[in-house]
Image (cartoon, rainbow, N blue to C red; front, side, top):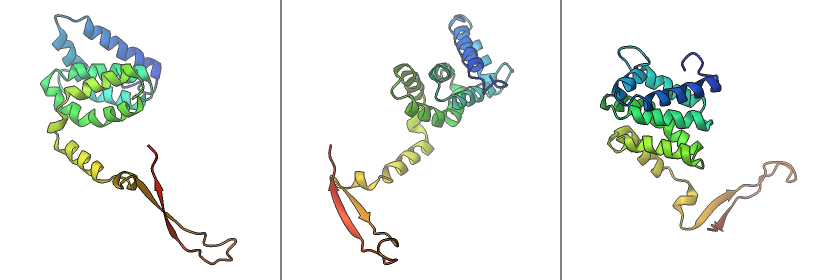
Length: 174
């Protein structure tokens, strides 16, 4: 996956193969998960980062995103992987969920992964959510009205004279 990250066909086949390997490793499930997380080495988390990078490279592909989300969900069952998943996968997965919100199987896999992570305990995530709710547009902060400032042209038909400005209030249609 690392060497051929840009090749969608190779990445998709590798992700599907990893999931099949994982599903058929009934007695050695934890060992296979460790091998995937470590990318075949004895320690580290290179595999998690490779999976997230592959998903980011092919975020618009349904198969690559779904298979990555399902693999990352399986990896979240190991408590040592959760902090790495929170750091590396949380933002890309929320972006992928926005992209695939109308594709049920992908959205379900991503939602399952995000539900398995302790997002509410992450201070950074809570601060980002608080900041985003405070930064609402004028449309959302008014009581059913959007206020738009209309400015005239600085030149052209007026011969370089600036037209006056006005404030227009438009009711929102729901």
